[in-house]
Length: 51
Image (cartoon, rainbow, N blue to C red; front, side, top):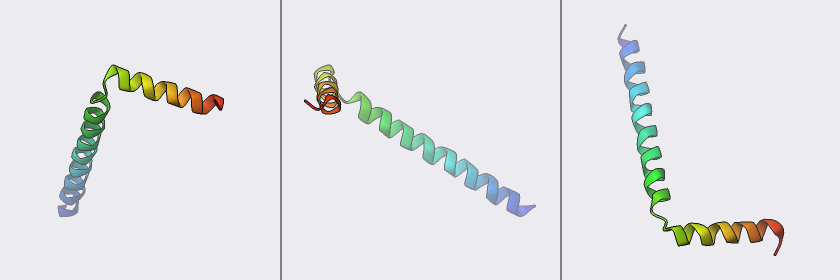
């Protein structure tokens, strides 16, 4: 029965680590200004069309 506790704690740690990774990515994404987002989109569009 003790190994169930270990598996449960490992699962809980995995969920917490995933939450931290998602929060960091969201914070990084929201750090862009609208002008930066627009410039990146224009650059990606130009790259995709070969301009």
